Length: 167
Ligand code: SF4
Ligand code: SF4
Image (cartoon, rainbow, N blue to C red; front, side, top):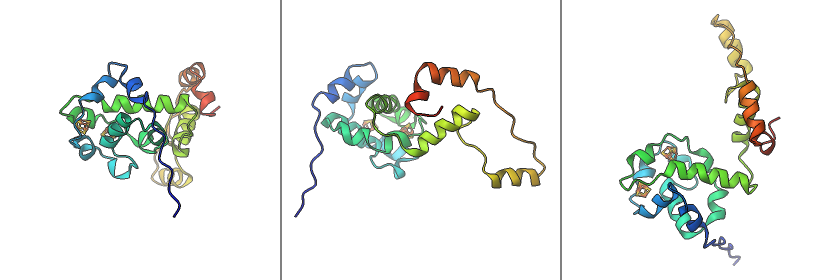
């Protein structure tokens, strides 16, 4: 029988994550699961919020960085608000996104598409042809144009536009 290779353990990962004011709070987690039961998108996540904390502690960096979960988080801060131990989980997840981008881990297509929309139009979502026709039928005005010059400047200066290839 073929065995699935075990994920590589990075013994320094937890130490690296802990090396900040936010990351230090990971140590206080006692796996009560309140974060996951409060999370509005946990059901869709391949790794649940409380599991993210545990995997960080176990040094399982690759499975976390390659998970969809870190991109599915809607940054609603519910987990952070409700954590009885003050774990700053939302900020930890945002740090994980930074690490994933820095290390060239592929970003989910839907996230890239939203970033491209934001760069091009100033909106994360664009209207489909159907929605445009429906609006016209209801005699709703055209969506106003957004000035994207500052968003573009920011994305260009921080190199986010290059990294995400949205230009
Ligand atoms: S709510 Fe806080 S203490 Fe409970 S599992 Fe989540 S991070 Fe850990
Ligand atoms: S901040 Fe992210 S992980 Fe936390 S509850 Fe909201 S969606 Fe879930």
